[in-house]
Length: 177
Image 1 (cartoon, rainbow, N blue to C red):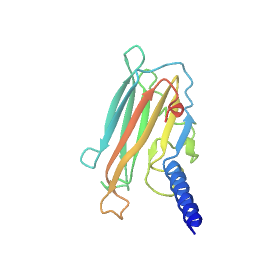
Image 2: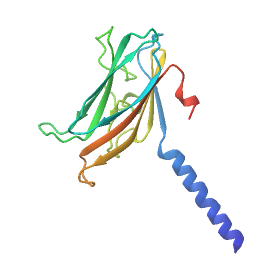
Image 3: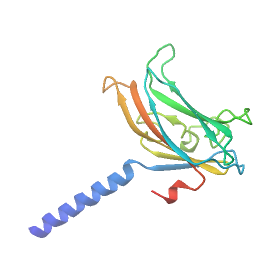
């Protein structure tokens, strides 16, 4: 009997451990941009709410010059001020013809690797809202992960806050976890 209980406990621990590991998967993609530009490494959190729904951050290249602009904008039903998701864009301030460097392909696609920029809590999207998203752009990596989100009311599709952590690094963040 004691052996059965120990086995059952071991199975539960393994199941919980594997669930915890799979709860926040890592999704990796490479941008269509393949230059050698590197960045000044930094990390920051963006706290988004309906009262403060847009976020902008300048990202410096390795020489210390403003080179990229990260922007987060809210999305929701047309004609409504409710927020159902946020979209992240990264643009090169020197090559403004590219609207978002966080896409793998410049053609619209529902492929998970081409939608890492879309922070959408809908359970039917290609990338889980809690996934750690890593995009290699030029010679650096952008890692983003939703750390917190809240709906009002709780059972609605409308977000009243989201906190997203960003890391800009010149080394592959998949190697360190």
